[in-house]
Length: 468
Image (cartoon, rainbow, N blue to C red; front, side):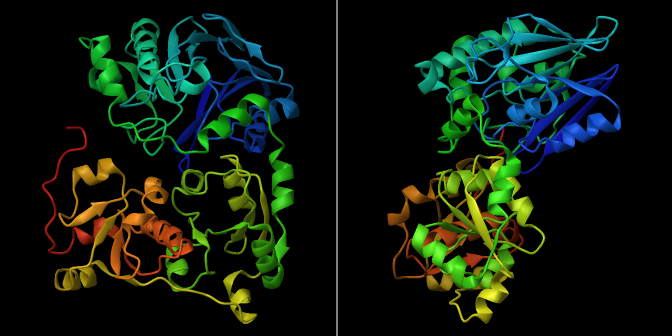
């Protein structure tokens, strides 16, 4: 028996490869499916099943393409209604994989089709669960993403999730391994562990949502408390996962087109394409194309694209370091952004050689910030998430989280300079690029963010443990 987790940090997402006796099952694959095919070929095995735990909202699964390329059956749990050919399992239905058995446990609540897959070994012992977004390490799936489809409140769904956890998962043995679909950083939960594989017994004793003495009302109150609005692209990803999509090979072919500076500029002006700069933030600070949006590949790239740009159909032009063009296109397609129409040939250097205009972003060190902020009295905007802000912050700063920035543009000074920071310097540059594209240019970025600020002598609020 082989179980391999394929974890993608950018999406905080875990896909799974399970093999027995030359037969393979893939659970929740990413959109680029060639790595799974190659893994099976290397071991002279055949992909038999593609199990989907639910209709994902935060990424586009590779189930359709993988099935087309391998002939493997796509499996969903009860209540699923995809537009393509798939097996809709009944609760408790068994699937043989070599000498293993995979059992579909219907666990609705995160969504109504959510299903946990229980793995039973050759001796008939329950070994592991692949819990999708039903159970995470340290948390459970948010119950608000299926409201429109299910005509239910998030409280209704939370109550259903409570029953699923108590009736289907908690009765299982403590020594069962838990393989969740996500870890810390995913927008599908709010308190996930950084660990990506765990033990069910540990979760029963440490996960707030699995307390043995917890009432349903307590569960509903705690699971729904503090939920941030889901990113706007989530429903569009669900639609793609339910109805199908074009092959990622076609997406890459369409987007992998080098454009001269003049052609790039013309496309941006005539089509209204978003100019997306995916280089490192330090490069963007020094020089960038006016009105371009920065979201660097070396951070939480794809989820922030979805949160900031939101419209998956908008044409995108890339400013990207050489040899990373295909990577950028691929990672955009993971969250449904299939409309890349080209990239700037030769990068920003060629743009400047052709005499095109560039802008810069004023950025100072945390030490410089500490030395001058008390003297000038300028406003400070902290663009971290509310939970980060609650943990510790500068007393004089205002919290305007990056995910909600577009809804709070009126709060930023139009003439007086102000400071902007995040945790480490990545999100503040994203925020600054958005503000600049909206005509607000008078910000000063604090390089290194709050992590660097804490190393100065500046006073911060009293630290509050995130789990308090």
